[in-house]
Amino acid sequence: GAGVSQSPSNKVTEKGKDVELRCDPISGHTALYWYRQSLGQGLEFLIYFQGNSAPDKSGLPSDRFSAERTGGSVSTLTIQRTQQEDSAVYLCASSPRGSNTGELFFGEGSRLTVL
Amino acid sequence: GENVEQHPSTLSVQEGDSAVIKCTYSDSASNYFPWYKQELGKGPQLIIDIRSNVGEKKDQRIAVTLNKTAKHFSLHITETQPEDSAVYFCAASGPSGSARQLTFGSGTQLTVLP
Image (cartoon, rainbow over all chains, first blue to last red; front, side, top):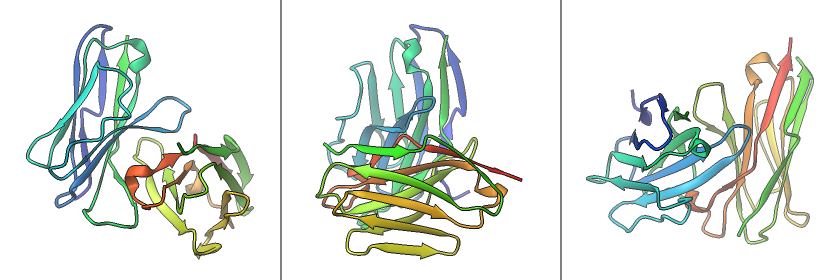
């Protein structure tokens, strides 16, 4: 398909373990975003990549969270030493370069459960 | 920074009735206001948006109104159908109108009862 692809769709882990979540954006989209959606909450911005520019990490909640984007395409969000409060759906979105509509194209998310 | 409040958090309507969801924002410089629909197990999808230079926009059964003076905007769905059942998010974006500056509301769970 041509949409944003995220994996895994579901991840159950034990407290203290590290997890990696993957996002494959729409081909040709240079902007990539990670959001966190906790139960009953809105979308919390985590990090933003635009082309080769330095990422905007201002939304990362702690230094246990990090993300990288290799080759301007696939991105990986890493959570180290997971805590129960990290349980949430992690959504990735992409948008085309130069878009002034602001439209985000979201993946279906990765649901993380920390036991 | 921008703060977006959304009401109600849950809304149930009978099929065929109208549904209205309201949002307020704090930053008077915001100029782009999208609405996203999130169906169960899916990612949010843009359904309609409005920029600050217009007061209303319609697309078939959905419409959005914007009052910049009061800093609030609303989503109106007419002739609701069961497939309209979903979580709806409003958002507001800063002066550049870019997705990077989007701040989302907390969402409204809409249930359309058959």
